[in-house]
Length: 150
Image 1 (cartoon, one colour):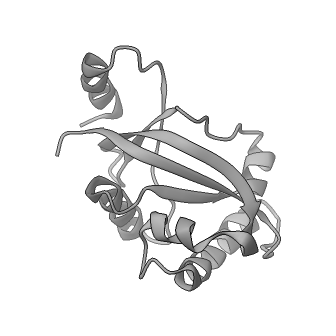
Image 2 (cartoon, one colour; image 1 turned 30 degrees about the vertical axis):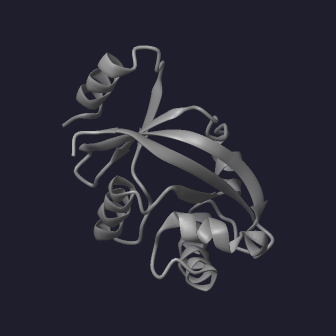
């Protein structure tokens, strides 16, 4: 299903939804992107994190609380619609165990979250000519699934 088809279906049940952003999760492999989307569908993954310096470099606004997202898989197919419930920034070294757990990845511990995300953020920052540090700001976003076809 395309993002537009899913959005059309969703707005039949929620005509006041407004607009949305469509995106897929980052990952070191296509399998990771699809696995993260599946974790969202299962209700295991209710949060994500991004490198704040990328927002600065791309001059992108932070995700709005109450905003809608269509999560895509690696085939650009719509998986579900989420609504952002909380957004905040914090230094990488101050990300909490609660946030790591909400991300739903690996064993859901803070130590595994830090290992995976430091590797991912290192690659993301290298693309924009910056280096990862533990003081780097992280955009933490929490969300809920509001629509899926599964």
